[in-house]
Image (cartoon, rainbow, N blue to C red; front, side):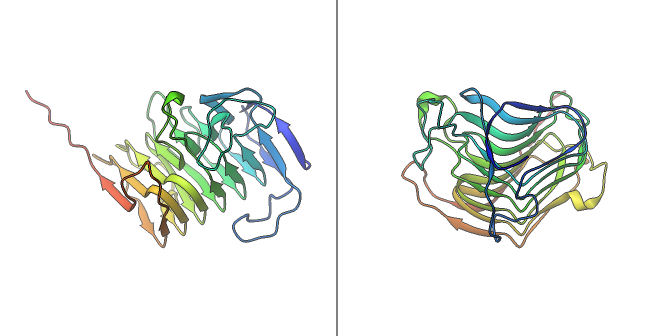
Length: 251
């Protein structure tokens, strides 16, 4: 896709590569050419997904994915003053989706997460996902009337979604990377079990590694850089939080 602004609510339903003019340029370190910017076509701070992926073997690279469409007004603002019109940038809410690659993108001005991999409803394990070399910034709102305040995360991996989250730079996010509800083993290669090389400036938590149990495969979390960003709505900043909720079955 050439440079320009595209107001779209996108569903990717087949395997393909969607490449913008900066597909080969890392926004964390390189000099970008004119951007192809994708913004939401309709305003919905709670549910709007700008790019919903419903097929395996999809690559999304070289775009600015921006939750603030200047032609829409939701009335809910980010911590940087942007008007937020969407919840998520790139999402998977499907079963048996593998090998999503999201790389060399700028993802910004969203209420919930920049990239969400969430097997729904089955929770079957998927693998081969790569989330790398993205600049993710200015996520989340503290406006309680939005009903989605106190979120604003970079990457969410939920219900056994195994991915390599590597070398992303995140600024002004409430949470960098969150995992959750992993109970089954990685069906693919161990390369999809890494959270490494990321630079994360967070208002609350850098990496939240949560709820891995029974036969879940382990994650390697290393070589990340965390910087706390003070915010009056938060009580403090945590680099890495490890949590496990235990369930007791009484018979």
